[in-house]
Image 1 (cartoon, helix red, strand yellow):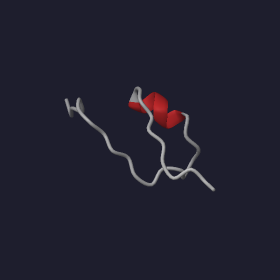
Image 2: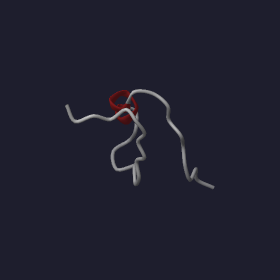
Image 3: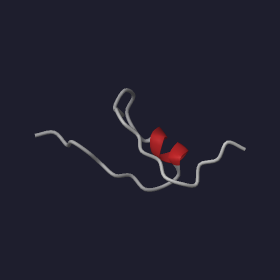
Length: 36
């Protein structure tokens, strides 16, 4: 059986770099996210 979900905690850029290409279908972010 394959893994259906995984929760990663850390910096967004660092975490995304650890994931294989085309492996993310949904990304949920919480604060703080700013557009400054």
